[in-house]
Length: 399
Image 1 (cartoon, one colour):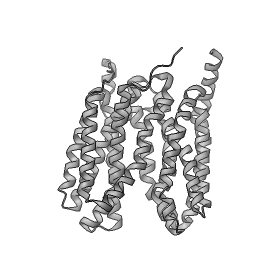
Image 2 (cartoon, rainbow, N blue to C red):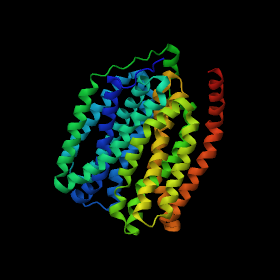
Image 3 (cartoon, helix red, strand yellow):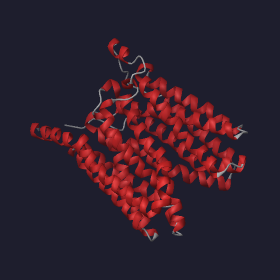
Image 4 (spheres, helix red, strand yellow):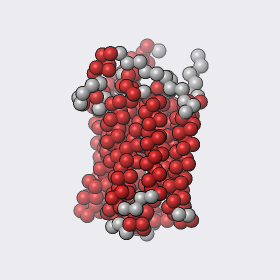
């Protein structure tokens, strides 16, 4: 019996659109801090706020996008997100005050939160159930590759061109993605009157999918661990005079995810989520231990491989689990719930972990994060893994 087709026109379009959404996100994250410093003479902390307030906008938007997407329509919300992000991006060219830049960054994040919630929900409806892990894994590569290529292109442009060239590139790529999204065919979700009635009001169930909470809570801890790398790896490498070699960490990370994703996604579908989830925590923890012990560039790059196998596998498989455990008419909420927790871990991490650095140092920080990831193994077992193992056993017996 042949497997259902995965690489359809719609799957390719929505994955490409998501890549360019996150490409512009990471490109601007890598350049806006310098823009704020050069253009407005902002202090390092305020310049960092100009970069990080974007994530706050994403989180706020996800709360309402997940609640409303199936009522408004998945395709309509995608268009609304793209139109908003295109309009807001125009303001980068005319921003003349630091306060205005902060507002633009927040609104830019909110627009991306709307659009990315739509792409995640649309792709979840397109991927065949039999290839859920594999399809989600390939889709998640759009973010992984954007995280590697975006900052590289951004840093190249600010060395050889103007900030306006950076903003212009983002605008062109977003416009092309929006045009391609016009050709999407999105399965329509029919909601009953009872479903629409449930969506009214400010109940927690209208903003979060409770069935996703177990894996979402774990994603917050995993996001916290990843934020220790995003926020402090450069400072850590500078302390050890390894900045040049450490700049290749995320390239190694991205290549590792690119190579491993076809296997991990297929294993998720054929052997069950536990087969990939337990190793993902342990491999991520091993990567953090390598950073804790790093005294050479080789160990830092080796850590990139382990983090790619660990965090890279978790981010895709965790999203697949969130969709798998949720009702079909709440896939939008499931997607937004998972990413709200993951983004919260990544977004709050720099502040919380920054409080630890003066006491533990960077070596100690990565040791603590390794312990947190080992803790996730046990947490996962109790909140999801044990139940998943019993269900997998039933499926195997039936076969």
